[in-house]
Image 1 (cartoon, rainbow, N blue to C red):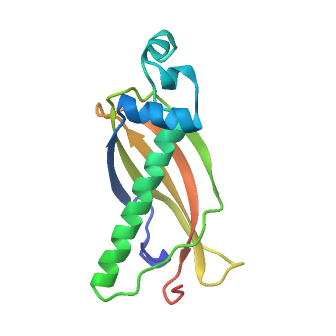
Image 2 (spheres, helix red, strand yellow):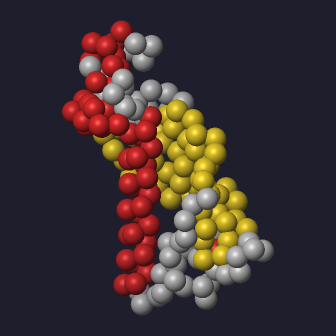
Length: 160
């Protein structure tokens, strides 16, 4: 992870991709979003989506997993270089959550994170707030998911 001083608007991280198989869609849906178009191919075909469709929460959860894994990779690389890694604080929330296009069984979704704003905080010395646009696109390059997330980022010298 980077310190607040190392972040600039427009910095982009490619987080990886994930293929939503029918089995994984159904497994997630049974546990967390048991709607017919997430559980059954025929119900999905008859729905507005036209096929077995991944839950929006499944799409978001995969994105979170990839975001955390990328942060862990960045921390490990910093440690390997002998640097003190930046340990980020919690997220005060997100806005503008949008499920733009359905993710159908067999779709491969690529995730990215782009810094939208960076600012120091007056109320928490040594910390700043970073806002980043998190997006996901299908194998055709079509945007399928987006949200604007906020997180506390440490300023250099404020290592947890």
